[in-house]
Image (cartoon, rainbow, N blue to C red):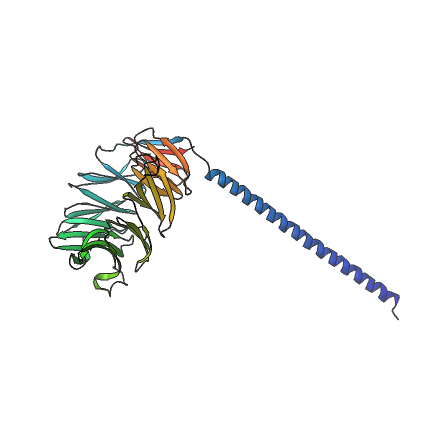
Length: 400
């Protein structure tokens, strides 16, 4: 028989258990409340951020404010190029590098009839077509010079100063690789009978892969070949370091370029070709072209082909391709372009007097006139802020 003491003890235990259960339920309910409130706050913040982004992305700018201006002097007749955060000027008489405040970093004098320039990141090579000297510089100064034994037809530079050069010699054409000091690293010859005549050469930023476009005649038909040579470990066991190549019937390929160490594109008179691979570049896409290409621009991950536009009043059409071969957008415009830039999600088209800027969806974000003659426009790190180089100043502007 249960005693009164036992009964009261069990009653207290049942009461304590109910209290513990009730307390756990309250904690659980409180946690759920905090969880749902947190989710709601995250959703609200995400919605606000999305709304602000859409508003910013759809914003149309109507004017440009000058934030700063520095006086400079550009010699009349000089050419101007952006150079890894600096400005490169060159002419038949020499080349120079200045910082964004107009201070001279270095100068190099020479005499050339038809100077050619190739830039890769912070390295630049300057040589004379049909000449025999190439100067190699970086943003700090002159790295060295290259003296060739035969006339120069084409060349390109890697970021480490390695230069690939096409040299002409009557019935034979030679392709040499030099370091910045002029030391021969490797060379091989080409003939019309064996591989064709090289009409363009490009080199990967790391200096390991060289791409050559050849033109030749096979059984009475004109052909072009895009060949890749690996001068690293992978290509050591291949003849002339040849690792891959592709032939194109009845086509001329005047341009090949590396976008990075793994991505290459080439443009012919009837198509644009895309290749990928750090060791043995392989064809990943081809897009046929029915109209004549007027100009080719590239930067970052994008390539732009400019065509005359015959469909409406806009004089030009720009097709923008991703390095994968995908056509990302087509832009119709009617200004006489000096240059076309690809920067993040912007497409910038400008000349000496006016500028148009489009976003990745093809919306024209800005169109306006420059207050001064614009020789060059360089996007800055801040969104919609640009450096404009004029004959007598470097101006930083921001769209508003």
